[in-house]
Amino acid sequence: MSKRRQLRSNRFLPEYVTRFRDRHGKDRLRFRRKGFPSRYF
Image (cartoon, rainbow, N blue to C red; front, side):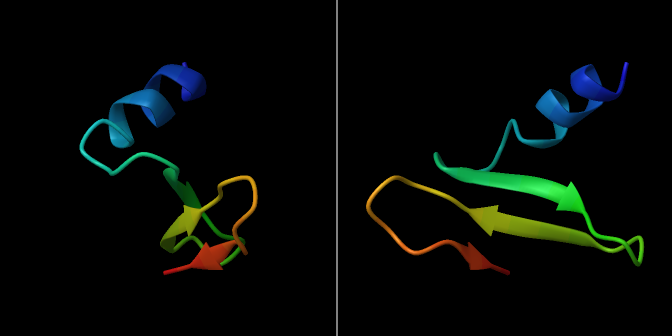
């Protein structure tokens, strides 16, 4: 169920960007791509 919810939440985000909930409960965006430094928004 959580996997399905995660896929739905990432539907409108650009490629290599994922949404996740941090330990404080806030939604954050993470950019991860091979050869690039990872970034948080």
